[in-house]
Length: 123
Image 1 (cartoon, one colour):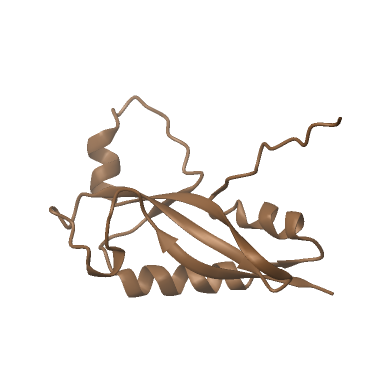
Image 2 (tube, helix red, strand yellow):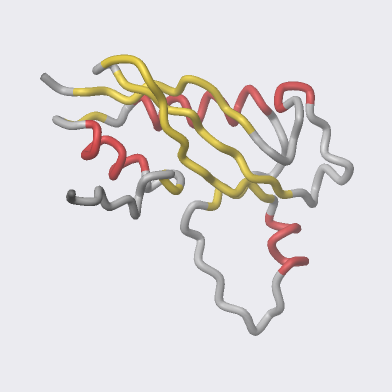
């Protein structure tokens, strides 16, 4: 049986109300976005973190001599909550695998999985 990811909610420790958020500078902003993702396999959800920013924020925040990884970054040209949520829902809910770990590893292409480096201790 294939397991499919489900986007349960979006949360940000930087933005209190994502749907009604209006960045102070609409062309230059950034914030951490946490995707709370569950699965068709049962209850529960886990966090996948992505950094949302505009190109202008990126340019202003880094020196021309820097080399910056785009991993777990989502570059937007304007803040539109509905478009952001719709895009992420489509990407998340298109993700399937035979196990939750397989699904989560695929979701890491979008955001950093809270358990990516977790190693279970053997007793």
